[in-house]
Amino acid sequence: KAREIAENPCVSLLFPWMPMDRQVIIAGRATRLPTAEVINYFASRPRTSQLAAWASRQSSQLGSRQALETQFVQMRDRFGDGDIPVPDFWGGYCVVPDEFEFWQGGENRLHDRFHYCRAENDRWDIARLAP
Image (tube, rainbow, N blue to C red; front, side, top):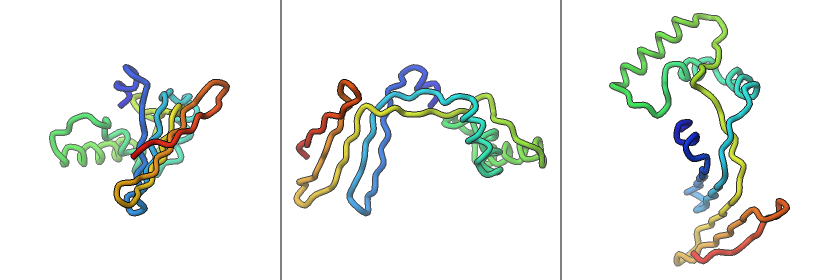
């Protein structure tokens, strides 16, 4: 993900709530979080999640589930009961939104869709979209 964002920081996020027949789409630009924020967030995660961050290079191909579990055990043994530092390949991003779309499913496919688009002076233009 980080390599892709480095090449193109334009991203979108989708939050579906299928049981409620709703979703929100956010489009914007991703920027790296400052190191201090990354360290604080990493420290707030459960210890097992910290170990998993070291054990897994997210989105890279794995030979097997066993290889992942072996790597996790190796990281657990490596750090013992000590502090686990943030891996140098691990980080976080903040998405600054430029657009939102709120979608509510409707009967007969007559959905409600509202599009918010950032305009000048941080104003938001709002439009109703056809389903």
